[in-house]
Amino acid sequence: MASTLSDSQLVARCRAGDQAAWGELVERFSRYVYAISVQAFRLPESDAEDVFQEVFARAYQHLDKLRDDAAVKPWLAQLTRRLCIDRLRASARERPVADEELVTAEPDETLAFLDEALTVHEALAAAPEHCREILDRFFARDESYRTIATDLDLPSGTIASRISRCLARLKAHLEGRSDGPGPSGVR
Amino acid sequence: MTAYDEERLAKLIRALRPAPESWVRAAQELPLARKGLDEIVARAEADAAFRERLIADLEGALTAEGYERDPAVLAALRARLTSA
Image 1 (cartoon, rainbow over the protein chains, first blue to last red):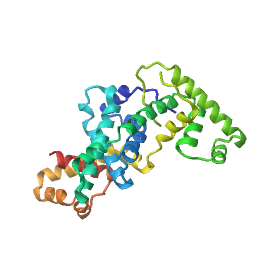
Image 2 (cartoon, each protein chain N blue to C red):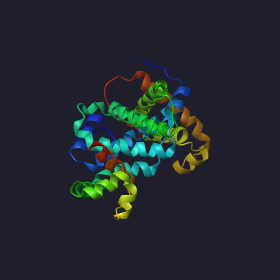
Image 3 (spheres, rainbow over the protein chains, first blue to last red):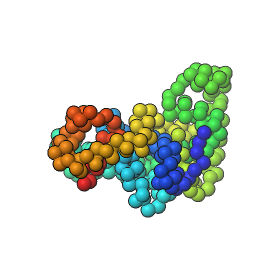
Image 4 (spheres, one colour):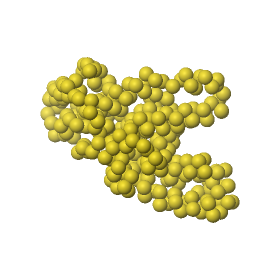
C-alpha cells in the first residue's frame, strides 16, 4: 500500500523517532539514490553500496538540520552526488586523472532524467494498486508476462492489454496533474 | 505541461529499478544499528588507542574487538570519524 504521507510529513515523523516512518523514507528514495550512483555516476556495485549506506546514514544523523522538510528529495540528491564525486576522486587517486575531468564528468542530463523518473514513480505510487504492481513488475523489475500472470493470478493473454491501459491511465494522470507538493512515492 | 507517450513513460519507469533488498533493509535498520554505533563512538571518545585503530582500519578494528560489521554502522562510523 502506498503511503499517503507527503515528504514533509514523513520527515517530521522520522525526526520524532518513528522507526516505521524512517523505513518508509528509505523505501521512498532508495531507487533514486541507487540510480544516481549507478546510472549518473556509473559507480561499480561495491562503491554504490557504500555510497547508498552513507547517504542514509548521514541523512539519519543530520535530519534535524534539514531547514525545509519538503526539500528532502533535493537534499538527498545533493548528498548522493557529493558522495559519488568523493568516491570518484578517491578512485582517481589510485588512477590519476585531471581534476577537471571529474568535475565535467557530472552527468547533468542523466540527473535531470532521473528527477523526471521520480515524478513518474510518484504518479505511479498514487495509481490503483493493480496498475502500480503490473507496471513496476514489467518495466522496473523485468518480469515476464508469464511470471506476472502467475503471481497476480491473471490470464497471461491479458497482461499486455492491462499494461497498455495502465500506461494510458498514468499518462492521463501526469498530463492532467497539478504541480502541488506530494509524496515522492517511489516504492 | 510535459507530454508523455507510452515509450517515454516505460523508459522513465524502467529508470528507477529497485535497489538490492539487503541494502534497503540495512538502511531501514539504521535506528537499531545506531544503538551499537553509539557504544562504539562512546568507547572511541574515551579510549584514544581504540580510536586510532578505528581510523587506521575500521573494519579490522571492529572485528578484532568482536563488533558486528554492519554496513550501516560502518557508514555512519566513517562519517562520525571523518567529521570529528
